[in-house]
Length: 184
Image (cartoon, rainbow, N blue to C red; front, side, top):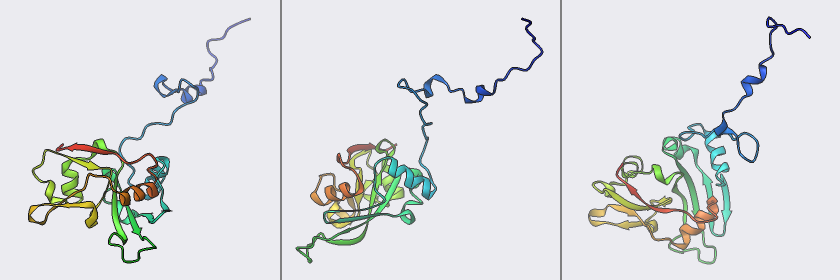
């Protein structure tokens, strides 16, 4: 048999070659890891769903709705905004009942900084702090804030049943993270 070096060899398979770090040891190719957070509505909603978070849901007394209008300017910081209604039906005048209240969800606690709280969420009580404990889900609703001297407020760090129910409605079935954040 004669070998011909002049013939073209089919190497079309080469474009499908994957580097070793993308190949899962159990077989198959892992999807590429996304760097940063999507800034388009559809991609952001898909990311929330991939993380097991809801776009809309009702759980117990809490009704949650993802709000792209509130999230759009915060998406690149990894902050998702939800509009929440809390209605305890047996007690229509319950002090914690609220409608259309904005809740913020930090999707990556390692990226949250004091500057994020001050500049993006307008929480001036954090100015001058080098670190502070912050939960993964926060709200400016008065029952979720600590009053400071001079009228400024910080987010409460102690878990409460209302925030727990809201977190379950959003999709945090194993609880939400409470961690110390740093200045930068």
